[in-house]
Length: 221
Image (cartoon, rainbow, N blue to C red):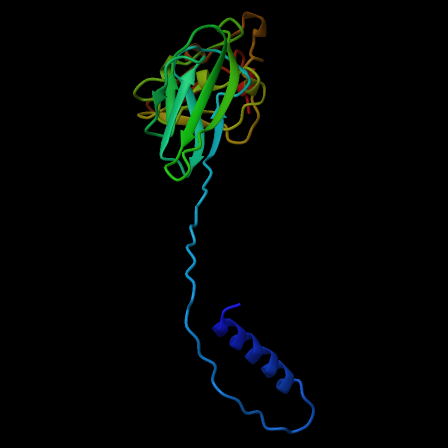
């Protein structure tokens, strides 16, 4: 042990002895000084993991192969990209991405990393496209006047059985908001045709909104 370190240790022992003594003794002593004899280098490495999760699509069946939203949450990333069916990587610069694919089964891979530890975090989900499973006709609510109308093609067949917060809007004439009411999109007047025709059975015009509750009994909420 170095001399300075030994003196410091003795001082601590003596201080402990006198402080724990009995009676009213006066404690006296000399100041202990010493010099630094060694230097220690300390390297701190920060490790920040990327938080990544795919919200949409899910492991469901979807009606349309066009404009499928890739919706996700990400935190602590520098770069993020995706690959469809192990194809070419596509860089992402915003949170919601839309992509096209084909009928059948597909897997989308989502990747992210950061410049702190350069570890790649990945997530993937397998989904299905079957346009014959069900079809929603809603061209009147997917054009430039759609407002906040529900994007029914982004709804999976599984979710369509218990859809909430459905909205039909014509930004110039009116809006139908079904709120928390549960609507089964596939249970209309003729569920066997696998088609829901919102264009033919709803209408907005000046001072008038119309919904055919016979054809669309499932919207009679």
